[in-house]
Length: 232
Image (cartoon, rainbow, N blue to C red):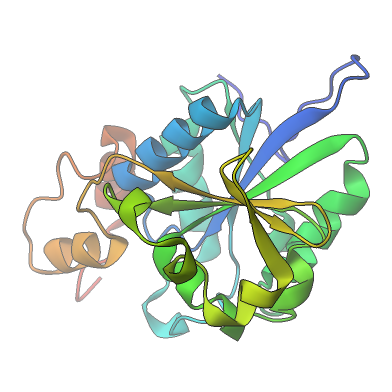
């Protein structure tokens, strides 16, 4: 199956499309990433999820991040059997650090008749005030925050980071936060898989098995190229 480089399949219909954007270092991509966005895609009726590997993550130590070409290939392998998943090189081809504001502006300018949904985890949402031009992000896209089971019991006043409260109101009719621009911010509980890229790297470095935490194709690629080994 051919991976759709650049993502965002073109359709002839004039109806507005619903596209999910999912960025990350993917160092490496794992089953938690895949299952989470699949549940989001289904729940929100998204026609496509575009995976966007970052080049230089602005909020992570670059020393432990392997070369972009390896991370790109692992994402390709991980998503190749899902017809709703695609991949974009936009952050890899752009010079400098990978800022979400630049990526959202790129997709917003490119896709005029599309509802964009930027997908991120709860931990990233809590730290969003550290992102470049974070207040402007919500003028460009809807947001979906993936949370652990039980989050819906969180009181409304405690759901949003304090710096965002003044820009949103809660819409009970849509069960989501509504930004002053009209874009929405949703919290979506997903199946909790206690998997992290950090843990996978540590297992490989210690010579332990990473089986069943990552797709088999990704596992084979890591072994083939000797990735994440302490003395590779």
